[in-house]
Image (cartoon, rainbow, N blue to C red; front, side, top):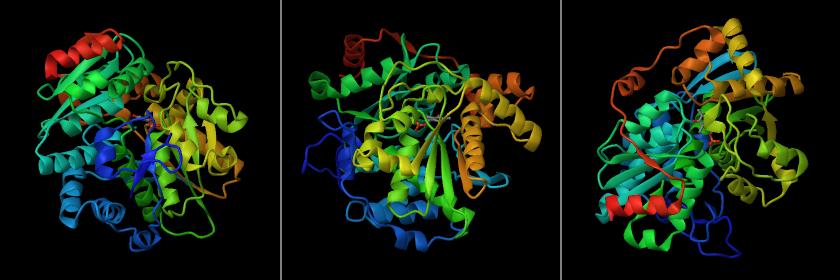
Length: 438
Ligand SMILES: *Cc1c(COP(=O)(O)O)cnc(C)c1O
């Protein structure tokens, strides 16, 4: 595969996967997107419902990166990246959950972060050089990245997170690793964090001093492997020619949904997608009205989806050649309020005995609404993006039930927080980075 900036004028300069992974953002400020989508139907045809996830990831990676990574490199990367797997779980008639929270930080971002860390380690080892990862997070990206890169050779990580806008558990996960992982507590919003990261990547002076690279959902090395579990879910659910499959994706920055659209473009038999959002609904609004109006994010229960200006929207536009009608024919936007999110959490627990985190609850409710609209003539796979134990307080106060905290998370709670406060200005960030790494 070759990649090009989403803002490149035709024909534009193309780059390899390696170059895109280390650049993060394209030099013109655009996001890297595939020049052409490969046809992987032959690869999909060789998979069966019994194919283990790691084997699937290996087969798909080998096809995507043929000519760029040899078989041995692909094996090493997949083995290092995926010691965990998604699980498909039937919830009710026509509706499955694809649980993506069995990785080290119990959220779907483990898949992308783990693969990216493994890929970077592989490339850096070949070139014997160092890199500095700069990540803006609204909570879950940062902890997944911190864990994925912790103690990786030739890699340092700096995490920007919005003060007071992440859960106490998320903050513990971000701030307690130490060693090659540094947390910056930004006195501002997630949008400020994201803006700072973008500005830093475009700053000539910093680029001259440090090998800066990104690991949030703008990085292709995180985005591409997220398509693997869409393939896994469909293969695992099995064939049923009469009932089309749709994915429902709880969305914030729209990286996850973009990965699903890529899998579809590679030939995965998916009829469409439901983009489930909270009140931060600029994309559903765009699909409805044709106006894209980015705005400051508002705080909700599903805080990892509190994004007012989703970066990956640019990739989505590119994937559909900027034609809203084409995007609309594949993607349905469904915004869900906090009150309805809580009600969905209660109802799913009462009816099915299943605890949902608020993000997954947004997805389940959007799926139910969509299924009703189609009079049940569809199979929905809702991505369960986080373990309910990551959102103990919300789950407890909503359902009256205390969710289990996975062991990997419990350990982080006991450790002391180490974070540096930061004013939300590029100058403040630059002076910190210069002092610590240059
Ligand atoms: C990040 C995140 C989302 C949103 O994913 P995007 O790729 O940003 O759209 C949803 N749920 C959880 C739990 C997350 O951490």
